[in-house]
Image (tube, rainbow over all chains, first blue to last red; front, side, top):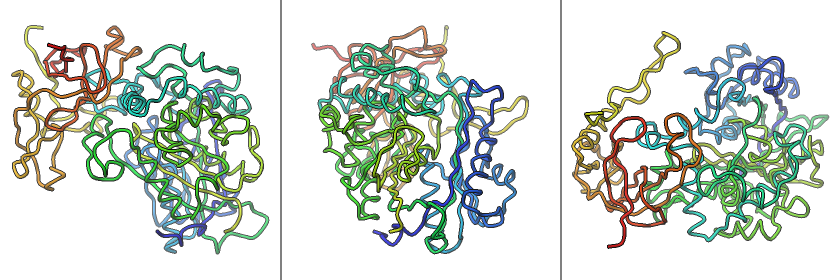
Length: 405
Length: 149
């Protein structure tokens, strides 16, 4: 593997901009990402002339534009050598940083500006519209395929094949909620603790998924941005750079109904299935690049949007064996007290989801540097972020650290 | 409804911003044969003439042969339910139908197909195709769980 990439680049500036439904003035995704980009450039100490690459996430649903990256570029008045969208659904957020590292290490640019954001809950009704982007309109949507029902296909098969019980899945929601209660931005910060019984008695949405098995919508929009540069350009002081130690990515399909048609490639190398996600592939790449192992990781954030998917992610990231996610969390593996610090913002279940973003990465970096918004996780040297997108279709894994390798 | 119709996907759906035309959502002439079959209550799959393999009606390319596929072959219309979900919360025209079941059928030809499922679902239970008009008013292939003889 290209271990030369490990630690070759650092994040030297980050920005995040939030607009809430409760705010007097709703911000557009463009306003949010431009605000976040300007924060990141200011923190990095670079001018708009120095941006060599603008890498944006996918077009926000509430700023539909054939060339969204160009709209961002147009607003920032920058003239990068490379301007493109990195769009493996939600996994494209980390994908922007991965591509930035490759470009920087190839020395075709010196600074990359990565920008992602969404603000859909501020502008549109989310429940009705989301399935129209997640489902195949011709072959899935006409059957009444809701977004949870698409993910539930994987849940049902996974729980059957690996004997995973609903109460084991529920533990993810319970532990995530505890972290959210400490986080000032979490959607569920004022909603109090929940129990396994609360999850199991919540309204059935799409079997086996109940309301509290599902991600909450973040009540607003989030824009996030990062400036990345090469090690030789990172000042020794006084900045607090964050080092990119390893990354990997795997994408397998666009529509879940067709995932089973994938044979003999990636996570279906040993036969068609819908229960080996690309997380394992992405994690293997990231661990190999960095020389790190799961035991080296002190904090994990994932954008997995349902309880069961969090178990699958924990398994494929190597924190337990395949099919052992239920036992792992039931045995205290991700306990708020004493377990692996997991989804320390509250995760998608209790922080809420806001489409594509780098805000989970920001949480990890702030924890590493001892400046978290929520409950601190002391002594974190290495953090892992898993970005997920599409109906369990795209997976990105990134390992970051606070010390120059 | 006197006549059973299917949705015409062949020329795509027009995307509009107010009265300004932006483009097309996924024109799909390659699936016309499938929907023609559905209207005749025939269940067809894409067929690769080179390897004799069957594929999802959407397939343009046989991934095994790297060859274009455009032929259609009558499928058995039977398979097993690879996975499923009973939908309890839905929007629009589907809201009134809850609970209903959607699932991924693994057809005997090895092809997966997402569909509405009727009958008592279970992992790997046998299913067979039927043709019914669902909530949107269009005729669709659906799958019915086979009961023990």
